[in-house]
Image (cartoon, rainbow, N blue to C red; front, side, top):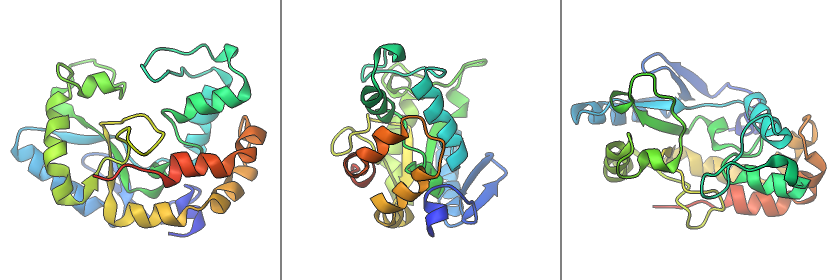
Length: 224
């Protein structure tokens, strides 16, 4: 991938999948659909709640959280009063659950946030929180199935709460054969260039600490 593809500023590496509706890297669509067929055979309707996400969308999410227009949560999933946080604290709070624009693995088209459509109650608003994938949650069976079967199709969970500073995300799966090359190619300097040109709230704080943030939230992931 080139720098524009790595940072979500272009989508030349992306293909639109009609069923289930999602956008994936051109070399990830087939493995994902194979995983989906296997899940369907076992009674689960696996679909991405989120797939490719471009830089502009990630910037919107970041700025919304930094400004307090979008909710933020602590490590236990409780709401945070953004108004009581200084810029450095806001940056850390956002990165618990959301990536920096330019640093999201969703930019690569290799990563998906998965739900089971058959297990989703009518009118239910998916939140993508750990409780939904824990015993008693609507996606507990999905979490168990993916833990056993996703590796057969090349997918793994990059955020398990072990090496990465990102909180555990049982819904987030990554296609290893492509994603690790992208992770290595997305250097701190590539990310710096993308952020420097963007209207990012807290930019001064982010750029001053970018090498550390890159090491903790981009370079460090959890392998199976």
